[in-house]
Each structure stands twice: as structure tokens, then as C-alpha cells.
Amino acid sequence: MRVLFRWFSRAYGAGPHQLLLVLGAFALTAYVVVLLGPDSGLTRMVVWFLAAVVLHDLLLFPVYAGADRLLRAGARRGRTVVGWINHVRMPVLGSALLLLVFLPGIIRQGEFTYYAATGQTQQPFLGRWLLLTAGMFALSASWYLVRVVRSRYLDVGRDVN
Amino acid sequence: MCRAAVFQLDVTYRAVGASPPQLASSRAVPREETPRDPWEELDFGFPAGAWRALARLRPAGVRRSRIWRSPLRGPWLTSMLGAVLLVTLPLVTITGLLSYIAYGPQFGQAFPREVGWLRLPAFDWPTSPAWLYVLNQGTHVILGLVLIPVVLAKLWSVVPKLFEWPPARSPAKILERLALLLLVGGVLFEIVTGVLNIQYDYVFGFSFYTAHYFGAWVFIAGFVVHVALKIPHMLAALRSRSLRSELRTTRAETRPEPLDETGLVAAAPAAPTMSRRGALGLVGAGSLLLGVLSIGQVVGGPARRAALLLPRGRSYGSGPNDFQVNRTAEAAGIDPADTGEDWRLVLRSPNGTMRFSRRELLGMPQHTATLPIACVEGWATTQRWSGVRLRELAVLAGVPEPSWARVSSIETVGAFRAATLQANQVLDPDALLALRVNDVDLAMDHGYPARAIVPALPGVHNTKWVRDIEFGSD
Image (cartoon, rainbow over all chains, first blue to last red; front, side, top):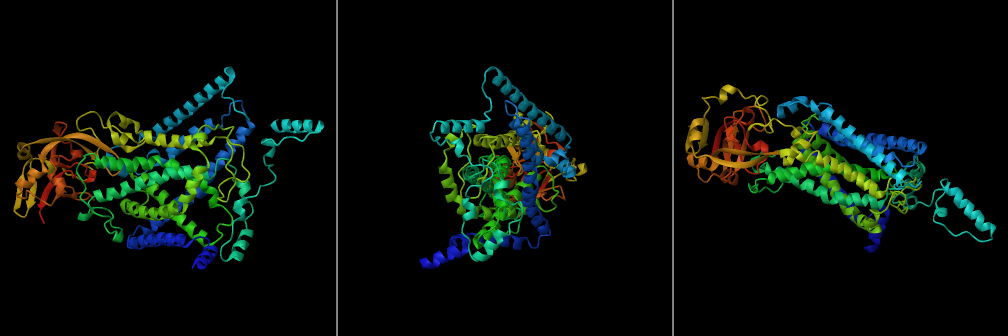
């Protein structure tokens, strides 16, 4: 029995419990798809499900990783006594996160259902997002200034390169 | 500069005929040469020849050591993020499933209706505490939003696994990767549909309720597999470093985790531009930002204004009827003529039908209760309602111990134009057919001439523009 177990694990690449678990998960997923069979939205749901993964892995990730690589290259070239790279990263990431999550309001998507539900329009959101972005950049820049001043007069907070 | 100094030191030692001590920095790995990578040496499963051949087919440019340079990636960081999600994602899931039960699946009014064996245990949703549904949906929506940066960071931390070559070394690995598709697809699908729903953007073109419910089950499938398989690795990785000392480690002192067979650690890491505590802080700051910008729609009051980018952070003014509207009278197609002097409340029961004008209702004993309306979308508004107790209307209808009541609206088009209430929801002393709010008549958008308001009931089931109430005891 033990020999069989070891032979299986070696050939399969994991213990039998792993196989049971993944097969269970696939069975549940297949059951969900069967239940959704009569639903006219099934194809769209599958497309959105897969698109979520593909857009994250093959679009969002490469875009932000690529942008960060450019930023790092810039930081290496324009090296200063007090490093500035994270003072750019933070407001950019903060602003991008808000754009990602609150995109419908910012670009005024779903205006009709929005109005039906609330009796209001999405008019203020773009301006608010821009102001929040400006605020985050201003905060980060002032923090950077504080660090520069402190490093100049107190000789602290200096990056060790 | 630093390297030159070491070199000079080395020369000095040799000049005096001594061998230089092994400095930590001089042991640093030269860039050109990749160190032994345990991940590359993992065993192949059956059929080993095929996997080995696949490994040799590596596309140009897919070399782990070249692409992945972050010195922060590693099993410890991944496990920290994983541990946070392990505790919090089940909370989001359970509150979501509880909300399905709160809609009353026993009356066929939870969506989706047809769920096969994925039926949840039905129980009578309590009416006390009155803020139960506020808490449930506040947790579900706000925690879900707050976890978005954590989920994105977790995906960032494991992204080298997605592009590793060979993509699998055994049949087990293929299946595990497919199960991961359920997990990652599931969590992203739930986030995307949820985030769109709370902003009334139905661009996806399918039923939100159906998609979000079944998507949750696919996510649960992927989550259970992943947790069961990875928990031992997570615990071991968490023990490999102390959180407290990581929180004291500056950027300059940050070193990569040791290269191991997980394939997460960069084989040729670049110099850190951020410490591990900085990375965790960045994720935390992202979560905090989303939390601050959304919690106001749950707690209401002055905090509501902080929900700057959400529909329910908006103000309607300062009058007694100026609070959050869910579905306007205009959108519901309510004809003002149907709500005028001729409007009658119809009470139905096995004993017959009774009709009451609004003036007659106002002549009955009035009860006032301060109750929240809480929506599935994770917002709430608490107001002072007054009107006739539902249980007194049940007595009038001759059914003092109803087992259910169905409240129907004048509205003829919406999915929520009627709702069935459980016995406890009819009999609760604070369950009202509200006629007034904050000492004035209800506004049209809030359900004039009368609306139901029941403690801890999902918002849309507090039927507006009530036309009739049927009491049953079967």
C-alpha cells in the first residue's frame, strides 16, 4: 500500500489528497456551469470571469510593472541625496487605485441606472478624483521636502546608496 | 564607489601578505553568474521525458533571473498577505451568503432562485438588533473594498509563478494551476461585479445577483483547494522571519529572502527601492484610503461626506426627507394620481378584504421607531419613522398570529415591487407601515403615501408606495 502510495505521488507529482481536492473543486465548478446552463447570461459570465484574469495578468500587471521599471531607471539616472522614487510611487498608486475602483462614477458609466436609483447624476466624481489625486501628490511632495530639509540641516533621513 | 573600496581593502590585505576576511558584501553574487536555483532542480512527474522536453522548449527571454528582480518577493511576504486574506476573505464570503438568506429564500425572493444543491440553510432572519443588516452588508462591501489592494499585492507577489517555465512539471501541477484559475478568476470576478454593482454600472449585461452568487461558489472551490494545499507552506514561511524585526528593518538593510524551491524569490535580485515594511505599509495605506473613502456610506451622519467617490456619499440636503433614495418614484413609474385622496390601503386575509384611507390610518395609534434602511450595496441611513404597527394591522385583518405577510406596491415594473415578510418581521413591535418620517409626511421618493419599514430587513424589502398587505397563517 505504502509502495503504491509512493509510486502514485512520484508519478502524479503530489499526494492523492491533492487530486481529491482539485477534482472536488472542478466538480463544483462544473455543477455551477450546469445550473447556469439555462441562463442567457452564462457566456457573458464566463467571458467576464476569464477576462478578469487575462486583463489583470496580461494588461494591468505588465503596465504597472513596466511603468515602475521606467521610474526606477529614471531614479537611477536622476539620483538625489534623498531618494524620491517612493514619493512618486505612492500618489501614483493611490490615484490609480481610486481610478480603478471608482471608474464608473469618474467616467460616468451607467448614468441611467445611477439616476433611476439615486435621482442624482455622476457629475461631481471626476472633479473629486482629480482633487484627491492633486492632494496626494501635494502631500507626498511636502513630505519629500521635509525629508530634504531634515537631511540638509540635521543630517538624518539620508539614503544610504 | 563601494565596490572600489572593497577592492582596495583587498589589495591592502594582499600587500601585507594576509588573506582578506570574508566580508558580507564581498560574498554578494556577481551579476553575470546566476546562483544555483532550487526551483530549477525540482523533480519531474510522469511522463518525465515529456516534461523535460517541455522545459527545454523555453521561449527566448523567459529566464527567471532576468525578468524578476524585486528583492522583496518571497514566501514570507506572500504568506503575510496570504494570512491576511485567509482571515478576511471568509468573512466577506460568509456575510455575502448570509445576505442571500436575509432576502428570504423560503419565499422564493432571494436571487438567484434556482440554486440546486447550492441551497443555503434557510432560517428566519432576525429583527434584532435592528442594525444587523447594516453590519452584515457594511462588513461585506467595505471589507471587500478594503481588501482590493491586498488581493492585488498578493497577485503581484506570486506573479513569477504565472510565467515560469516549464509551466508544469507533473500532472498534479497542471490540475493545481487550473484550480488556481478558479481562485484568481473567482476573486477578481467577485470584486469586479461587486464594485460595479455598488456604483449602479451594469455594463456586464447579466444578472448581478446570479453572477455574484455563483461566482462566489467558484471562488469558494478555488479558495478551499488553495488553503488546504498551501497552509503548511504559509505557516513555515511565516515562521522563517519575525514580523517584528521586519518592521524594524530599513530599506538599506533589506535583504532578499533565501533562494528556494518556491520560485518566488528573484534569482538575481536588484537593489531594494523599498523595505518590506514599506511594501506592507503601502498596501495598508491603499486599504486605508479605500476604507476612509467608503465607510461613510455605512455609518452615515457627518462621516457620509467622506465617501467622496461613491453614490451614497452624496447629500440630498438637510430637510426631514433629505436622505438616501433607493429608486425614485419617477424610475418606479409611480403615477401621482394613484397616491392622492383616492388611495386606499387594502388589507387581505382569509377573512376578507378591508380598505383604509390615509386619514384613517393616521387616526390609528401611531408608533415611532428609529430604524436604519440598509441596502445590499453596503450603505445605510437611519431615520425616525412613524406609522401603524404591522402587527396591529394583522389584528385588524383578523390574523393576529400571521405566519407571513406579503406587502405589495403600486409599482408594477420593478423586481422588488412586493416582498414577503416572516412572522417575526410582522410581529416585531418596531415593524411599521410608516406614514411619516422625521415628523413630516413621507416624500414621494421615500414611498408616499405609505411604506413598510422593518428592523434588520434588507432595504429593498421595505416596500414603498404600499398598495396592499396580505396576511397568511398557513
